[in-house]
Image (cartoon, rainbow, N blue to C red; front, side, top):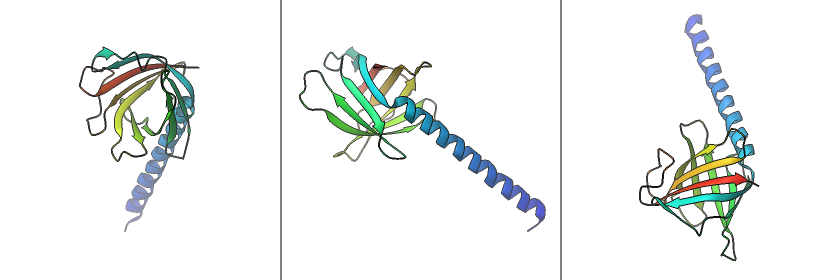
Length: 150
């Protein structure tokens, strides 16, 4: 192998490592920004307001290197629901997968953090459905939430 080819391969490997490192920093940045307690301020499903979800409390905290633990507590429910969340901030729009312990298929969605880090938009399709491409709940099985950080 010529030295030019070796140099080119080394350069490609370096660029790949830099890109992976940059993506890992963005993942951690978004994970850190998502961590904390949130309150649902707006909730829609199938294009209609969902009062049961309004004022729900959502807590996100780091679970593993690749995921967050999400706890959702509805105002009228005694028990909270625990979920596992994985994010991919490198996609446009940023993607999120939400999984219950007993469900093989995640609910696929998108998310957007406000510039101030105090607001969050989530749009999630029921498990088995296609990931939404925009922040609307008009399609069947799609839930749209707006949250503010406590």
